[in-house]
Image (tube, rainbow, N blue to C red; front, side, top):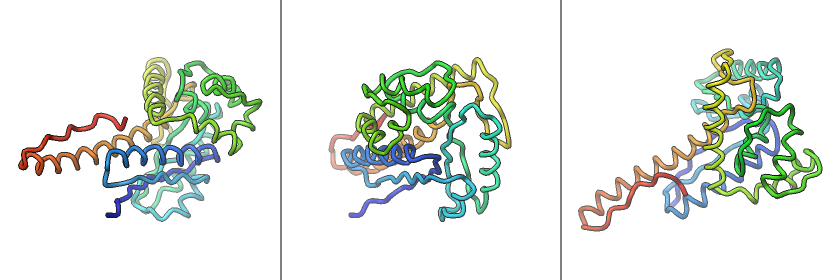
Length: 238
């Protein structure tokens, strides 16, 4: 029987983000297959700016997520927000999944904490090498397809969960010490480290768990009638 598929749509700024979401999609679907879920997921991540992305996407009425870096530049970041506002049409909900300073913050969190304020993307290189036991000589080497795939091979689904939990701690601390910027209905922290990307990845996991547990509750009604052991609800995908 063909499994149903749920698609999540992302516009991203670079190839590393595209590769990351493809890897995450594979990790989740392997887990869902092990759990005998009756559905799969697709994480459609396309390198594009919000204004052009909305012209290509056909999933109107869906939620779209733009994954972007703050990079310590408020004017440039607000220009991205302006594009997202312009792109809103045909019942599309465009959400903001940012990392401050950069996506590399999220990557490091898979293996270790990253609570210090950094000045630019290059400052993450030492943390990446230490966290993943790699020896990138520069950011360009890390961002190459071959280089980044070496890193992705070291990321498991358990690592993604750990990254989400570490990101929650960062955001909780940021809420205690910094003031959130509110611009055109979007919110972020200009002080780093800060991020919201983890919220949308957490939402994907929550969706999967909800679907699996709903299916199990349906199956359990029949199992109960037959006197069979009840299948417990899952609390995580691990």
